[in-house]
Amino acid sequence: MYAFRERTPLARASRLVAPLVALFCIALFPWGILALLVAVTLVVGAIEWGIARRRSTRFLASFNLNWFLAVGVLLIVGQLFVYGTMWLPAERIHRRGGATTIGYVLDSGIVWTTVLVDSNRTIRRVPTDSIQRRVVCQLKDSDIDGEESLLDLLLNRRRQPYPEC
Image 1 (tube, helix red, strand yellow):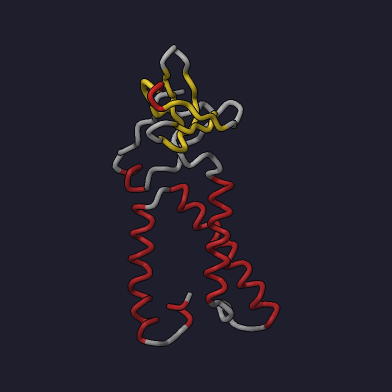
Image 2 (cartoon, one colour):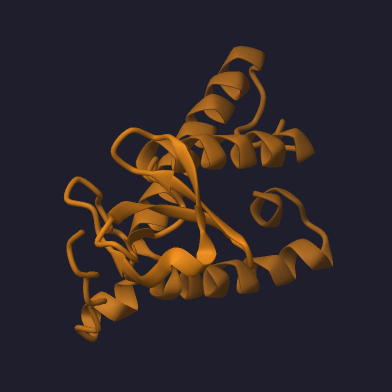
C-alpha cells in the first residue's frame, strides 16, 4: 500500500521488491495460508474503499499502522477458523499392559507424561516408564489439506499422510 501511495525513494524501491516478495510467497507458502491472506487482503481493501468513499478521499489514503494490527488480528482469527484443529500431532500411545491412548502429548517428562486424550478431551498423566511406544497418526476427521505450497503441488511433491489413528 505504501509503495503505491507515496512518492519517496523507499516507496519506488518497494514497487520493485513487493512483486518479488509476492511471487516468493505464492511459490513457497502453503496454499491454505495463501487463500487466507487473499481473503484478508480483500476484506481490508473493501473496508479501506468504504472509508475512502465515505470521507471522499483517495483510496488507500487512510492506510496506516492500525491496518497492520487489524490484518494481524484478522489473520489470527482466520487461522483459528480455517485450521481450528489441535496444533500438536495426534499420537497413538502404546502402554505396557496393552492399553492404547489416542491423544496429544503436552509434556513428556522423566517421571510423568501429560496427554490430552482425544476422545473425551481430558488431561491424563501417565508414568513415562509405562509408555512402550508413541506413533504419530492422523485422526479420521482431521484435515491436513492446504499444507503444501504451490511449488510442491506443481512439482508433485505431496506430503505423505500419517497412518490413521
